[in-house]
Amino acid sequence: MGRSSKDKRDVYYRLAKEEGWRARSAFKLLQINEEFDIFKGVTKVVDLCAAPGSWSQVLSRKLRGHAENPDDVKIVAVDLQAMAPLPGVVQIQGDITKVSTAEEIISHFEGENADLVVCDGAPDVTGLHDLDEYIQAQLLLAALNITTHILKKGGTFVAKIFRGKDVTLLYSQLKLFFKNVTVAKPRSSRNSSIEAFAVCEIYNPPDGYEPNMSNPLLDLQYDDFNQLTGINRTIVPFIACGDLSAFDSDRTYPLQLNETEDYVYHPPTQSPIDPPYKEAVMLKRQNKLAQPQVKISHLSTSEIAPQGSSSNSQCTEKESKQDETDITELEDMEISG
Ligand SMILES: C[S@@+](CC[C@H](N)C(=O)[O-])C[C@H]1O[C@@H](n2cnc3c(N)ncnc32)[C@H](O)[C@@H]1O
Image (cartoon, rainbow, N blue to C red):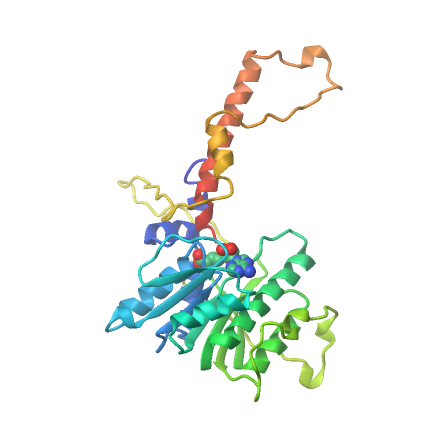
């Protein structure tokens, strides 16, 4: 695998680097906006689960870029992880399940509410689909809960959702708070992923609703909610968004070059500032990573190459090339949202 292999495989990953976005996720928000015009009239916005910051970049470029006075635009970005600074974006390193985070966000709006809240939050997926869907649903409910503290009436909430088997309950909960709830699948979101985005328009909480971080929203009992009937079952429209001529995120596109042009590799726009693999990369460079102890008992001695023999050193060289690639990929990883 060379440096350009991911550029070839994933057109949005490549475009993100070419256009200076920190992650390919930027295109998801841009395509949702193309369909729903969610940025119209927005001057105060909260970006929940914002790191490494491509959605905040989109908000900053679109809202500040089109404002008469960019300083009138307030963008507050929240994440568990630290994020490199962005123009006009206030950052809070915090947990969206905590009421103190809601209070800190509100303090930045000087008593006013937000026009728009977006949340691209995702837990570290385990691969166990039921568990991943459950945790994602909990994160979305935490985002909704925090939104009820900070969004103005009539405002918009956009949140990542996993279209798992229990998703109808989430739709019903969102419909309690918003007049319109639509599920959007941007072209840049892979078809192979169950990810989609709930676009919730016209915030209108039930009469007398008091926002409360300890209310039972987070305490849902998982069962077969697709059995809900009548008024309890909410069916929301599903919309595929992004222009039909936009790139298909599940296809592989050749590098668009003419004969006279050489391919130019673009490094990631913003390297991770404190990645969890930093120590491993440093140890690898110093050749201090522990070697796995492999016991080969079923091979005869003639089948085992002695230490330092040519076959052994070839293997080491190949492995080390692979490791180099792995490290480059790790360093590129931040862009692949
Ligand atoms: C897919 S990334 C977001 C990408 C981002 N929208 C962008 O465009 O760069 C998901 C983020 O959710 C954050 N996250 C997960 N749980 C969180 C929590 N409880 N509070 C705050 N952030 C959380 C993770 O730290 C991670 O940065």
